[in-house]
Image 1 (cartoon, rainbow, N blue to C red):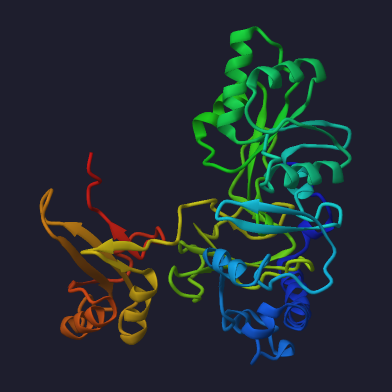
Image 2 (image 1 turned 90 degrees about the vertical axis):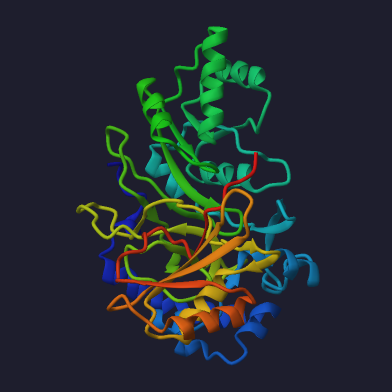
Length: 416
């Protein structure tokens, strides 16, 4: 295991929690006083009272999926950037969503993840994330330079020129997607180019498969991964051991994490899969209960380690499971409302299927209850009232539904 980046990573968990909860009221007050969005959203909230996780969980979510409409209605940032905030770059993610970048060094907090991956001051980083429009290249670039590294801004594409630069400059570090690293290595082999200077890598932006990790390790490149978004910057990162192995992703120190049931803002039990919700203390973009739309879960069994923060299992899919049934959209929020109206329901999952290859759409609401039984007629009436569609109601005992974060499961075959 690599050494911690700073003393924050090794804090006893209760000390970290006290520090976060002590800082939370100040964050709420700052956001409410300086941003038009939170002035409205938190109008009835006393910031001084938000000093526990329970109080935080009572605040409304701000969904990433809502940013496009928020920014269109109140350009350019939807009223989420404090008045007078000092910004550096303004970037754009698909949507489009405009992403403000603070002017402080390492404003995305990426240096911590790079250090955990084995990057050190003086290293040359070959950064293949895009520098065009999107934040990716800048997020890693700023983190590397905060560590004292030199950066080659390779960006995407142009594999022949990239290999030429690698053979000339001899970088020790790769940053980018794992699939593009594999492409570069294959192209280098075909060209007989020497890229053996690479010793570590930090990847993100797509799934990092075990076969890829093993292939890079076989070439002597220890490549770990991190989880970050254009809105929040770094969320979590791996800290591999000497063999390149890592257990889960460690939450960044500047965040409060909640895992909530999709379609709600309700925190789930430890270990249960749900939507990743983050509160960040970034002063230029103080996102509070920001629902990322990503699914993950907290690891409940973690061996003793110098890094003491909670660990995520990693990215496990998307939380927005909205689907169309008989021409009508059905949303996770509607399934959540059914369970709220019937307290005897512990969990529920709506399974959408089709009768035969070309038959009508069918809905089955599978509900966990303490004894595996329940009021099918009443639950069915509520489901129909909320979705305008009929559903078969089935009951089962606790623990029967898979722990995968799905509230709506679409089993219909995709044509062709």
